[in-house]
Figure 1 (cartoon, rainbow, N blue to C red):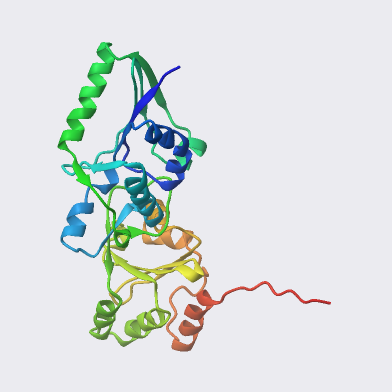
Figure 2: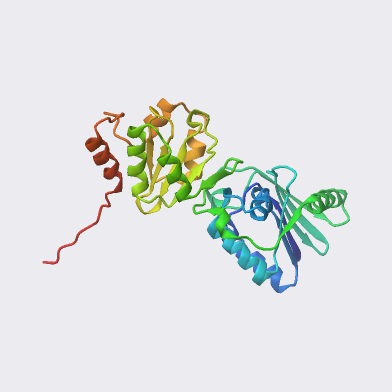
Length: 302
């Protein structure tokens, strides 16, 4: 039987709680045996810069629940966290080191439930003796990357998004303060656009984002309304249309529409495909309000 002393991940661009939960047993076993556990996480590439400069950005490559769970592992299981800051690291490298033999897994799987249970992934498993040339080669490769990486001792959940997804693009969107966006709206000279944007702002979005990385929606903002499972793309430019989506995570939606035209985005949207541009203010207000009607299941006792 292979006695495991170390678990080292150079895993991925992306790591999520849903995948870490599936590794709980082995993490606990290594912790109880006083082994060393170290994660190098590519999606944290910009974390230190954002935190140190207090920038209003959200790290799309990790969600709040994962960040909080990693903090638990740091505190309670002596897990070490690193990230590679010179560029985005996207490879997947799992290292399980024993006294005489070790395992290396190299392939496509991120640390997530989707990668472990749902996706079609391709990984190669190497089981080698510790005096084997392959062992020395793989371990040196990992050690070199680890030396170039930066330690992270705590993750501030304010810099992470709310929702976990199984795949992501390598970019960060910026978060905009509510009051600052209101000031932008107040400065508009187009009264019709100002009226429309105020309708959305009156609904108090949970978050507002910019720098979305969507070429056809350059300059657009994204409003997030968590209680209504609603995402709205809006623009400060007159004559630009808005686009509404329901029941989509931000990451998955941005990935889905990244290369689409405005017409294609509209066809995918959860909007009435008639009367796209609404000039009548009463009709426009009614249309906007329709996205904020909660449906309740009513039961009547008889």
